[in-house]
Length: 349
Image 1 (tube, rainbow, N blue to C red):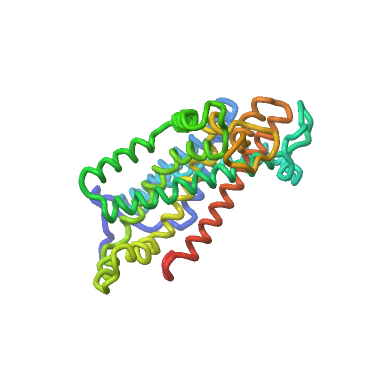
Image 2 (image 1 turned 90 degrees about the vertical axis):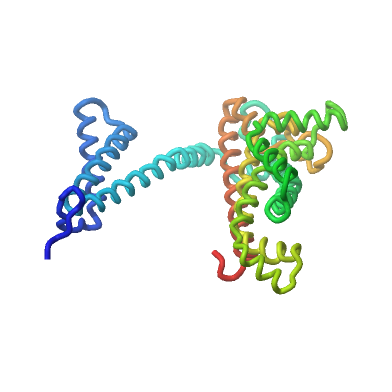
């Protein structure tokens, strides 16, 4: 019985062991390191870049000789996809690493439980409690505005919307998705200047500006999740005599709850770190303000911006505020996963 051959006539003679890619990768990195040692001073970025290119070429060439052209192409595609993933992860991992390294220098319970009242210059006392509370107020109010509006809009577009009205809403959502954050801040500033006055600042004002940015993200993500629900589920519910609104509540939304929760969390993460609109709408203060309807209110993004501009100890407080913001987002994602797991239909992932 003859061995199979590829379209180019190369005989498939065997199968490479599972450790081969790792050995080729190690050899490629070693060759790249030795090359830069001879030519110039090696750096981590240059070694990994040249070593990665050598690995892709060497892995494909070895597989083509041993396994044949088809498996070689499969290994080449796998290497390219894996390489693209690694390249995409580099900025994220480096950013998180820098935030953690710089933020832990001043992070403590005192930082999380005190505000900046009476703190001047390079005094190491003081913390971000007022900014944490302000961030929760502003983000919570923005979520209360945009999440119901976004979900109801998505339900209308998927379940009821037809004709010019639905197309107009879709175009409006697409346009709002690309609005710069400063434009949302200007909109809220102009709106409350007309309604209340130019000196007015509050958490509600900042929440309105963030809701302008958050709503189109909620609409788009929820709309896509609702469209993924099979029509057979809707038809089965209608066949049992269940009205349409109850089918949407009990069948469609329950089926898509995990995806909806993820979309909502993406929208919250999109706005919780915004600085430009909050600079114009909520401003910054040194103490805690629990009145969302009146007075300036500190938030973590603005607090980090002001402290970074101050320099000195403020530089450390800025990184600690950024680390606190990352921790809040991670905590909210954990809560969202628990909520989606609890409300998802049994058997759903």
